[in-house]
Image 1 (cartoon, one colour):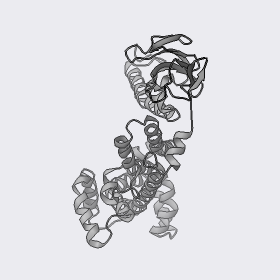
Image 2: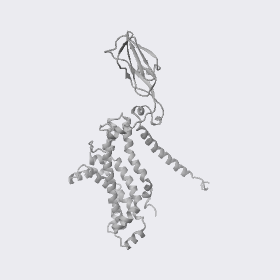
Image 3: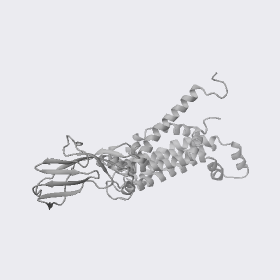
Image 4: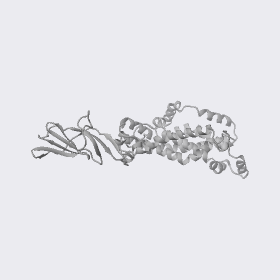
Length: 378
């Protein structure tokens, strides 16, 4: 029955369900991060992102009554508002043990002849038989509900603020400065090398291909310190040139391997006909091979850009950790330590850090599978 036309095998259903689960596991945190980046810190700490469109009710921190004392009818009064904004008080109290003891509008005796009234709009009215100057006024614990609130202030603070609290803008530029050249340079070098290994005959070609395959499994951590010492010895030191060269060296084996496998699968007749017509190897490479190899170039560009954009180790080693050269991942690590309570800043910064890789991936993803599968089958 499994082979009847129009039916699906259990394996196909398992694959589809697995893909759906993986998509959900990736999509939900991304959507949550995006929604949280537009919310205020108070709403993030009091409710989940899935409640962003509903009214939020939470218990607020204690608020000390303050205001100008006014004599009235042999007593002293203070009135004002505890919270600014469109907030509705559902309960209040004067003790942390009973923060919801009273309903809005109730007048309560809080001792020493003083009475306190808190309304739904958080306005209060305090009366006292004696002056309150020089005395400590009572605290009020509010349970209040507020409508959904979204703001662009988080992005303004993160991208354009010069403070350490949010100044991601400089780190964003630093990361672009590292990632774009570190993606383009290895592609240019690897494309020439892949063409030579695929279509040019010379002694030792097989050994070079074997060496490149072997370099794919070498951990980059083994080369960090020797490579940094080499940079210092030849005068490069720590800087953008050093980190570009490091990313180029670490990315070249995979780039050459992918591009060579793709170029080998191109029709031989096209290249032989071009040679018969008098085309040089450089003309064949630039006018025939490169246009036909765009899927492989795009697939490696995705991998290399994602790697360099999300990298922290290589950037710290070859670029440094000072504020002027710190990349986006390093800035996020610092924010986690110094601004662990500012959830709105962390959410906005994290979403900015994944927005550019997402844009690159979805723009070029149609070439990814074609480039990766090139050369795997005949």
